[in-house]
Length: 456
Image (spheres, rainbow, N blue to C red):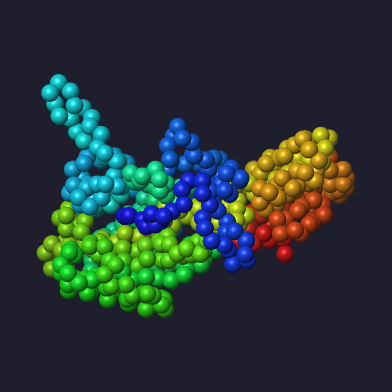
């Protein structure tokens, strides 16, 4: 499946996008925030368009990958893994080589020695041919359909250096991609299922959908499949949109040659519209690979293939979310959820113990040692957009001692039940609360993937 790339006038690697946010301030720029928040870097010795994910950026990506995997299972998909390399012949058969050779990396010849020509291997631009072969690996009956295969895998684009930038235009794309093989009469239900998944995930991520665009067949004969097949497929797409009560823009002539599609359009921080997710019908791959299923009449029938990208590529989704939240992610996406600050060196052991409790509960916590004033470290944490700052000083130590006298120790220091004073990213402050309450409240927000900080 090919994802939409930004237009050719995309700002280069280190140039901020044009335009202003609605409040008059420059829009959030994921390139700048990526550097400031230490989410990703690029290095010339690695190459343009090949970002290195730093630990904090890797946390955000891992959380999105976990969400994608859960959504795939919820939608009835089966996970598969396929190699990033394949013989050139695979992409010649799929049609990618003829259509997209200029966007693919050149073949690598291996095993050419002693007069033997060897093989030509290619980095894949898409994984749909691999999934077609998995479908074709056994005989399928109409009773088996739909077959849904999901993979979050790497794809490669041989983009020119001048148009590469940040995470939005890269040479390696890690794509959340599912392929559904179904009977023609099942298309509507599968489109509804796919759009439901997109809407559910977007609500969770706080992404507003600008509009839906239905890309139809145009005039001419450059399309694969009969007009009747296309008309029926387009009717089912319209019916799916109608079933969900979704308005859409009609775009005749905008379909790919191999099938109509629905693009989910969003607006970025600079006010530019882009497609993040797509539900795409494909008549091409099943035809080229001659895949079939046995119908109720005992005859061979051609399945319809549906490309379903719910979260798009990890790179484009993370870039969008960085700008959407200006780096202040919801607790479940925040790279560091809780930062523990000991007021002085005397409180360092207690702070480390609290961090251990938080990590044991599955929360991402760090201790920032007393290498500067408390105020300076609080400002440093606020600059990192950390949702919760837990402070431990003499006041909290005395509160811990009183709690221990009343309730018994909890293991963080002799005769102490840990208490912290809490500062929330939204400016609220809570005085001397038990660590057990901190764990309970934050864990609930994280488990629910809530956008809120809690403690209401």
